[in-house]
Length: 398
Image (cartoon, rainbow, N blue to C red; front, side, top):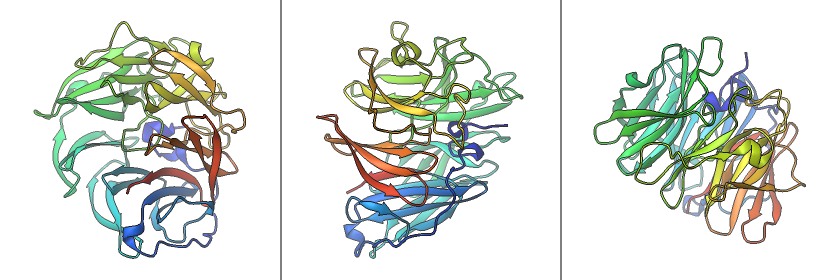
């Protein structure tokens, strides 16, 4: 049985398709205060995977290795918030670790917390220095949403999600989160005992931050089940994004041609889907799609599937997606990001820390590299190669 990368975030089927490499030399930062970039990379083949978390003084160039890295067992996910980095790797128990860098520029684990019985955190959403939410997932376990203090790394509440369980939902996954006003919006994926989608709708739980209770579960049948995790603090394709107008855009997959891949909207001030908005991604892009990488003014990238036999599951041996540009406001596609870029796997990430560039990873079966997109000219440039595997996160935090 194949399990989607996005369902368990970095689960068995996200097993990184590159074999582990010997670690090349990498010049470490000389002082912790000069460490301005952080990156996480996962290499190896399941179950023998390792994640490497590194810091850099300046934007990496050439072939980037792991000589200064902290090593964590398993494939990983990285979130960043206000200069700290929150790491999780696949494997029970689900553990979220908080890192910074010491005076020598080496990664330093500060604290962590654990949710027993589960294997990873599919989404982490930060509200403030004292309030954040983490959704823990794991095939065969009952998922949980916890509220925690990111400063102290103490769990402060566990949200009761009994009301959003569905008959026939043998496996449930919490995928993607954002927040607005007094609410957290969290994607929910329901699977049957045979691991097929339960229903042809996109589902979002609306959680009241004051009461720590679910207000309601909303659904929209114009597109199918949520498949991607992702939050503002993360780097992978996201199922739920918040724009500058505080409108929330939610992506759903197609389901055996019953419904298309699409984007629906929850308008600012509302907690229901907008009946007047729908972006049919199959029509706009020409194929099924996965997730959104939002980068401002209605502009986003999506992963266009060119491997229908494996959609929306990941294939560990092929790269079945292309980066495509979409305009959420105009509900149109602007075409292929670049004909020169190869097809990528859905392990692709993007990151943006200023108004000039978007950085995007290009994971293929044989190589991994980071490119940049000039947001003014549209020019694509290769920035560096990664020797150890797939990039899970990359950020400039100072």
